[in-house]
Amino acid sequence: MQNKLQELTDKLYNEGLSKGKQEGEEILAKAKAQAEEIVAKAQAEAAQILAAAQKQAEEVKTKTASDVKMAASQSIAATRKDIETLIVGKMTDEAVKKALSTPDFIKEIIKAVAEKFTTDGPVELALILPESLKKDLEPFVTKELATILNAGVEASFSKKVSGGFKIGPKEGSYFISFTEETFNQLISEYLRPTTKKLLFG
Image (tube, rainbow, N blue to C red; front, top):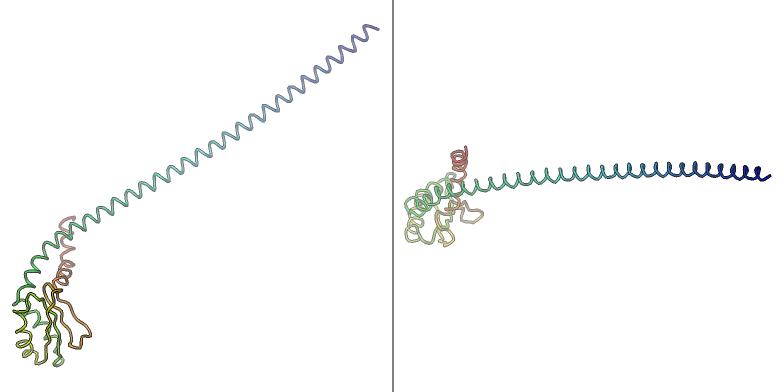
């Protein structure tokens, strides 16, 4: 009887031990599989984060390079324009200023322009001239020019006109500018392309 009881106890013990061992191994295998899944998922997420970071870094690098290139290009263009303006300005400013402060030269231009106004018959004209040339130009405008055109000519003198003149019909509907600034702009527009080619090819 004792032996039977011992056998039964041993059997139960062995079966319980075997079952517990099997369940333990299953739990361990399951835990291991879950751990591997978690690691794989973490690695995949890390790879995605790294790829996104690399992509963003490349985009920033490309944008920065593009911005730097554009800024350099704009800076070079602005510098070239400044050089052109400086050279063209030097070439024109002094010559134009000298010519448009010479009474005889201004008289010739006024006469040529005024005659174009009167091709269809006498037209009374108004002129705005430099204050600095009033003494030299007033007699010419009011007497000689009026006689040539066979029409009235009204002259006013302004400190705002440093050289050259403005001319238009006496009723004042419009004026055409032949001032120092106008000539400088006109001449520089013609000189600028040539100067640019000479300087920068």
